[in-house]
Image 1 (cartoon, rainbow, N blue to C red):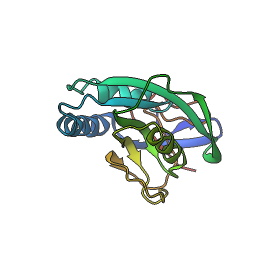
Image 2 (image 1 turned 180 degrees about the vertical axis):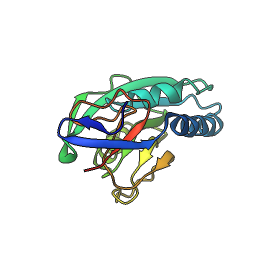
Image 3 (image 1 turned 120 degrees about the horizontal axis):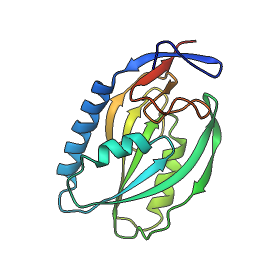
Image 4 (image 1 turned 45 degrees about the vertical axis):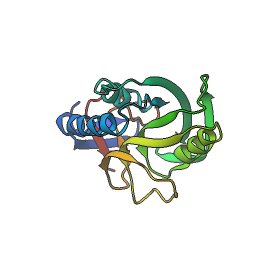
Length: 179
């Protein structure tokens, strides 16, 4: 992408290179491979934003595992709507499983808390969160975010699966809003 990157009415500048992102994903995958050796976890990928991160992460997972997808939405423009709309739900039994929720970004925590509550109610062994990005200044919930590639400031970011009203997901790099 050229810099600056204009999406709709906003301008974005490069924040994180592809090389840095891939190094973080590789390190996270190595940790998950160690922590879940012999456990056969179920990775639940939160769509749409997590699709690129999940693909890169799961290509590096060497333990036996399964993968499922759930689609939820809580954003309009650059702000959270404050409500969660579940679009596609889980259709496989989760009881007695180790669950790893794969998220692109955790900011307010609204989405992840709703998903954790829903999944814990299904008698799972445990639920952990693996996120590419965490905004610690925005996240004020009590659930731990167990696995994080990068902690970032409370800036609006796009690229690497993250979008601004549908645009921007198709970059291998991450850009932050500049205006």
